[in-house]
Image (cartoon, rainbow, N blue to C red):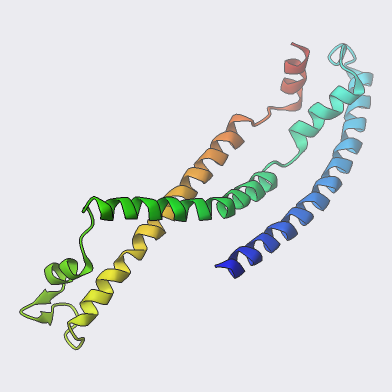
Length: 180
């Protein structure tokens, strides 16, 4: 498990470095585009940008024209990695609590009810009866799988909600909002 986290954090660091470099390139392009748009507004519609400084206009322009998805995807990936240990700890605590309260069946009971019929397995005719016990123990892995899946879906939903709630409008709309 340690190797998984080391590799995942190395991949996250690499992706962060690539994102940082890409973001610098986008910021330079936005600065150039903002200067051109500022000059166009000053020439054609100076009353529309009246009261805005060029620096404020550049911030508005960057907010409108900077792609936001790569940053959100990188943050979601980081949240996935950080949530894994906490999710496993929470699932283990829930399982221990359920076992202490007697709410979880023993694998022998599951094997007797679901897989064995008159001392022979129903589904796997050429397997010994002890295989039903191992199979019943392996089913518990789905508990962890679906627990991690639910946590990751909650993370994706939270990031998507924030992504769409903070979506900027068109440049003209954002200039109007900034002047209000």
